Image (tube, rainbow, N blue to C red; front, side, top):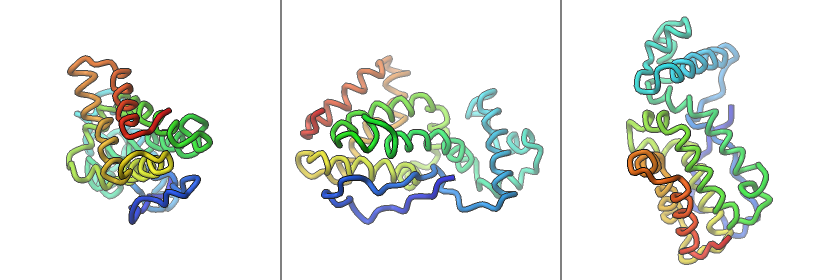
Length: 218
């Protein structure tokens, strides 16, 4: 399990050639004892099976406990609440995305130019959000909690750093990074693709257009 990312004090130095960011687990779990780690895997396996069978809306702490053959208190001790369980389910899926943009091959990985990485990042996140939208939306019970999840802080730091490395126009600070990430957030992607019938390719074009407006050509 990857270590949580501490919130950065500010945007990274623009002179840095590569990121110093590390993988961040979606729920930022602490180091676990061997038995606790086995319980966590057991519970997440049970939750994943239930998710596939009944969807996120019907996933409860009680049903996970029953499916895993443990007491309900075990589930609450491990994840605290249903939102914590849902966020933990996103951990593995999120870690695959993180690995792609932190250490994977071009165009998302560190061997590609910053501008190229930015243009590849948006479409990859959009498709990730679309593929897991039910789980992501079900975990959004507290709007402010979204911004404190380590995985989201990692995305924010990553985009901020790449904007600076790509010499984006204006002030490529946290506000611009938040604006860009907001344009590909799960509720918006779900609304535009599922409720408005917009193809995901159109959203990808919008991401590229936004970057070009700020001088990030690819």
